[in-house]
Amino acid sequence: MAAFGTRSGSPRNRGGSAGFRFSLYALVSVVIMVLDQRLDWLERVHFALQAVTYPVEVVLNSPVTGWHLLEKEFASRHVLEAENRRLRARLHALEMRSLRVDALAAQNAALIGLKHALPPVAKRWLPADIVNIELGGLRQRILVDRGERNGVFRNQAVLDDYGVVGQTIHVGPWSAEVQLITDPDHDLPVQNERTGFRTIAVGTGDPDALALPYLPANADIRVGDVLVTSGLGGVFPSGYPVGRVTEVDPSAPQPLARVLVAPFAHLTTDREVMLLWFRQGNPASPLKLRGGQLTSGNPAVQPLSVPKPKPPPAACTPAPAAQSSGASQPGSTPVQPKSGRPPAHKGQP
Amino acid sequence: MRASARGAIFKTVLLALILTLLPLPAWLAIVRPEFLVLTVLYWSIQAPWSGGIGLGWFAGLLLDAFQGPVLGEHALAVALVAYLGVHEHQRIRNKPLLQQSLMVFAVLVLYEFVLFAVDGWSGHPLISPLRWVPAATGALIWPAVATVLSRSYRQRA
Image (cartoon, rainbow over all chains, first blue to last red; front, side, top):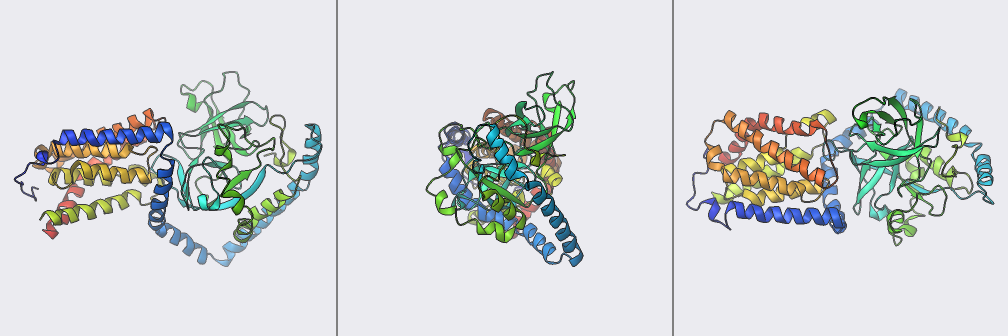
């Protein structure tokens, strides 16, 4: 095994002893960690790192991407027709559901004492492709192909067609890292649609489950209850569907096992997600956390890119386009008071 | 000789980084050994004067750039692995591969523990027992990795 033989100079004599050099490197590491963790000074470094690592991720993922492209290319006519039928049916269902939205929004506005219906809380949508799903084993992160150039900001809400997906945690020039709601680090303020009760949904590390560990023992929660975002926490507007309660076991020894929620979002099969910009003044918009910067992004970038991204949704995905164009008409939205009953159109069965 | 060792180190570290980042199905990703750590450990033992702690630190920083919740976390952990390799290289180097595997297992458990501790301290705790699996698979695959890496050098030498 001693392929290198032994050199005259012992390794310990170069640049101090091994122990000394290790201490030096360890000290530098700790300083970096503290700067990164406690002071948020390294956000620009993360920005640069995203710029550097994004091309590498794209290249490493090219076999998978290529496979998906091939699959799409050679999908049989039969499969495509079936998908077309399914999407058409879904479009019809959504159209039927949204017929009453205008009326309901007006009614709702009258009920909460506003003179006229507000513009929708969602200002615009931007679809983003998932570049990499596997960012570090057990942690639930994905990398998407939109970044600061598209006006993406840190702690931006990310959704898919079915529910809440997560939020951006690091933004690079062309890419952003999204932390999924099922990441063990992620806490999501939610509200029980049936009772209005608010709590926090914590990720479990399992892509099919969220946990509600902070419920009092006598909380009114049942299997089948639908959870929506509560609008607290400064990231997600209120009223977006999160998941359905699948398991209630108040006697479980571990708090994380007592109440389990299956997320609506298709976290494991999604290839595309939606980035959301919302209107600040809307009652359904999230309450501010600290300062305005967090929830609004870089104002220098955003106004420029607002008109631009409108066409892409229409071009690449008909369904979200219908959604966004519908949502851009004034008064056609899920304007929602912070508590109380959800509008009927959103009722999950 | 030294320059060629440097070349071999650079190439194998790059290859190990690619193996570490390659997208895999979920269950495979969980059992995936820490190829980069094994490679750094191998060179720390075999060529303590060429690679060593600096190599470990930079390799760890590369890992931090791609994964890891806090910058500097992997840099610290891999530098520790390299330090142990450099410090104990004479004791580890001449043991049979199976015995080396046991020592590697101990080093990898320590590596995972440093990550675990930093995760917890920095407020990104990850308590799933699955996070310890790569230490075991890393020790199991060590004989193969060591054989391949020694060939990578000898071919050049």
